[in-house]
Length: 95
Image (cartoon, rainbow, N blue to C red; front, side):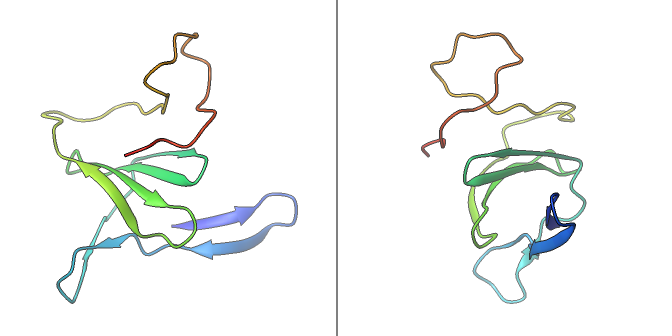
């Protein structure tokens, strides 16, 4: 996955989205959905796993395999938010 500076068109980071302690490490594979919330990048892959990655170094921070079916939408919000669904995340999530 690549991160771009939209004002210059320059690629500012390349993330391999690898995880695990065993070498070679596992790769997240195809990213179907993506959401950025402050310092985290959230991805959904075809294996129905939601993962959070550090925007600084691309390292896996958190994942959940609790979804039984396909994940068809992604919007990150704080637990205490009560605003409309169109509000975006305003502070980093704590795991």
